[in-house]
Length: 298
Image 1 (cartoon, rainbow, N blue to C red):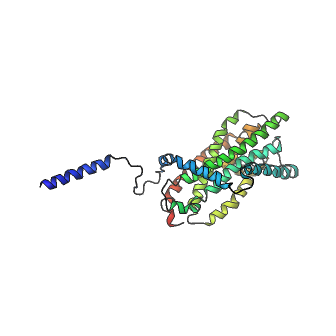
Image 2: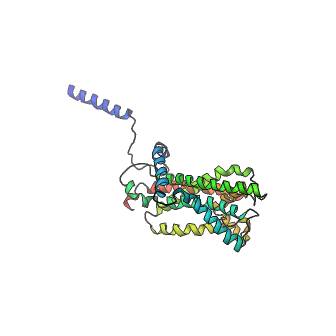
């Protein structure tokens, strides 16, 4: 009888000790679809930084020009756009200097497009790592958005240099108070690209064809976005359709704030805000659902 009492005492003590302990990691049954584990992402912020550094270093490690490609790409794109769409096609730039107009659109679009394209293949590209080591899967696509932000920052410096030049040599560039929306615009482009990318990468676990569609689809989408033309220059019957693209309001706001030419479209901008947030949340939910068992299908 005494032995039984003693065993019960030790069992109760052990159980209480286990419940009072705080664990670094707890493996639990499948949780709610809306439990996005965002606190875990913050807890693994050191890993996030390492992944951002890895993406930045490895991408240009064995290239001749290295980080200079950050400058070469927007410069050559701007030159080609200026020659074809401004000089040959005579497309309006709302009185803004053509090189500055196209560089503004190119720099902004590249950040969104790169974030979407690279995020859309996260599950496929990192399946071996996901199958061996545990960490919040959301860390990987978020690291892509942050590493692209570094690239955007370098290209944005180039844009500011060109902007300063035209401000000193012409009177066609007049930045205004809408420039204060710049951080909001960048944040919205980031979550929009991330949200769409999360949805696509979740779908590619079963439908690999989507990865190929994204490659050329993002190029076609650029022509449905006011990158090489202002929204005001689009035919009236297509203007509403183009405005339904959430990137349209963001790029128009970006240009208007820095260049001061064209106009600000409040409706298009607030639509972009709402659409970006909805797509981002939807992307998180879909990603959260698929990441629990995607290893079985990839």
